[in-house]
Image (cartoon, rainbow, N blue to C red; front, side, top):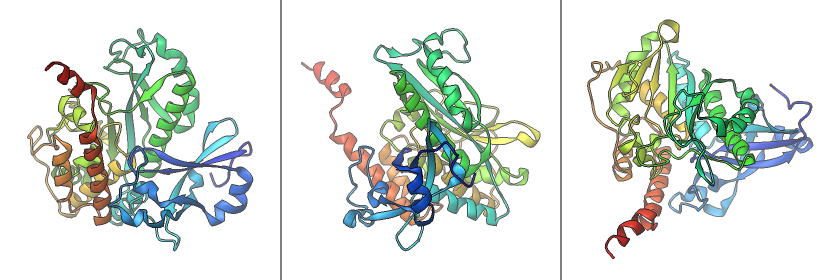
Length: 396
């Protein structure tokens, strides 16, 4: 699509931030067409240096000095309806001199796609997200409804509206999942950038629709101990490249744990979730493995099961491409099926230390992600939690 739809009266400009959310500005259609499509629109630099609570991370000084403007550039290929007369458009972001913002998640992915394409490869990506629905009375299903039809009665009014609202995103499948209130939505394979844009648009539309029903859509990696909401990435590539790509990802996966697990809560999923494997091994159609070889023939693909639902999709896919490309360039061989070659980090401290050693991501991105994870660690250490209160009460 190269133009706004005829019924668009308002336009929501969206920029993916480092925390799997959109920074947004709503504008009139007339203003977008008259000014923004040619000149862009301003966005404060600190969007790429803020915490999930929108507090600035002071060590990322390049993005905070003066709190000036970047420039959003709408990508009209992403136009998506969000409500009557309102359309969302995902944007790229550049500095005032026209230089792309290299740590912007969409740009990170673009750069990795360009590097892989230079080797002759264009990946196809499909993304699965799990979400937990709850209201004031708790999860909308009192138990897991994995593949169930019955037991989803409280979900049905919400799901009916979700089907209509998510239709433009080409949903492949949707079903109940194994934890209370949990549901999985799978988007069809497409080009990697579109897949990640749509995964974030899906989360936006799911949250919006749930709120209209008085329901919270929770993308926490671990809604409870022993439970996990995941972001599984299915990736197709030339058959000749799959093995070295897999080998590269397995080699780099531990160093990239901070990308798969960016929050304090992420490590609860990795440590306690039964289908959140930290063991770095691959298996054929094995959902207990960190990497599953799925499909056959033309549909043969790699399913990467590292990331939680709280991870930034563009960065997750970009990190996979960077690690896999290294495997292709070095012609690496994967380990034997089922053999453990390491583990993902078990704590954010381990992940922070490991990230500093990666060679497959750019230095500016490593600096940004390290600063954001350090801020997450500091916030967690500064917080008083219900767990602390409960353990304190036992000593009374």
